Length: 218
Image (tube, rainbow, N blue to C red; front, side, top):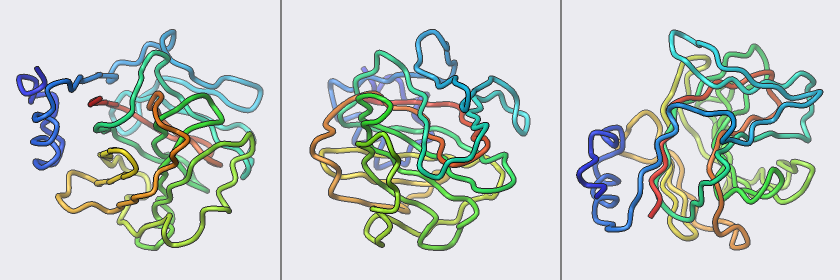
């Protein structure tokens, strides 16, 4: 039972923890240790990855060799099926220009998923957080630039920050660094993307660092 596993969920805001514990069929998936053979992780002429330390913590580093503002990449476990639930992980931007990193969920494949991503360079502005569904080979972020898809948030430039996302039906709620108040709430998730895996997302950035992925499926 998930309520006997609270030690794994102490980083979730209290209201989320209570909601999760109320679900008798909830299951916790711990991906703090990533086995690359059990994940889909991009490795091509233009994309790469590695397991290394960043600011004293072991992490998965997703890397982009050539900049492309029309492209994004994701890394995710192969056998996870997520529809609703809680997602939490830590992310950091080690680069020096163009930080775009985030969370992909309800992943069908590398071109069909939903994403909420973070721009540390835009901390404190309406561009700090953005949601969009990805359903094309080309990452068409410019179609989702209106304010309803974005939100202000205080993000560290290069330090680690913690992300908690609650997904329930058509609603996404995002918390940063264990704060009780969400930084982003969006109520019109894409109805054509109902379930799939969960993973890390890298946009037009040289590198993104990720660790401690925990997924609770409901």
